[in-house]
Length: 164
Image (cartoon, rainbow, N blue to C red):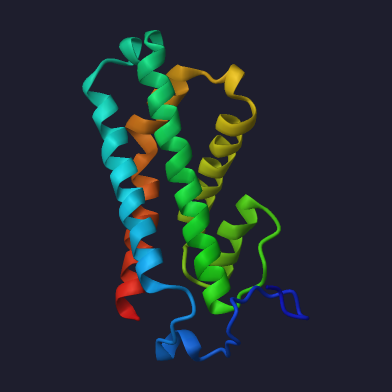
């Protein structure tokens, strides 16, 4: 649901102090389960690093599965982001990358992490829309070099949830 001023809200009406008071609009268990799922996807992705880059690129059964886990991880980031945006009554995001911008603007993410997460959302678009053009070596590199970005997001959202 979107309010007259373009801010997202859940079925219940929020005020600015609801988050700090711990009012639960979004199901806490649902958000927690999404964070757990994201951690599971990240653990699965780390498992692909036991093989070589060449093997990863050469074996479709390996890189296709890894790409699916990456897609699920990116979708989890978006799902969690949209839950938080709705829960807090922040402005409605106009795109996937904008959901990350909203969290940054509201002080939940620093600019550096937000920038890195927006690149992950670009990868999500590649996985979904340009799947025939994927450079599997670059996917391996992203898993080996940049997966901590997604873990950082998970940690920040988990700390936020615990603080409620």
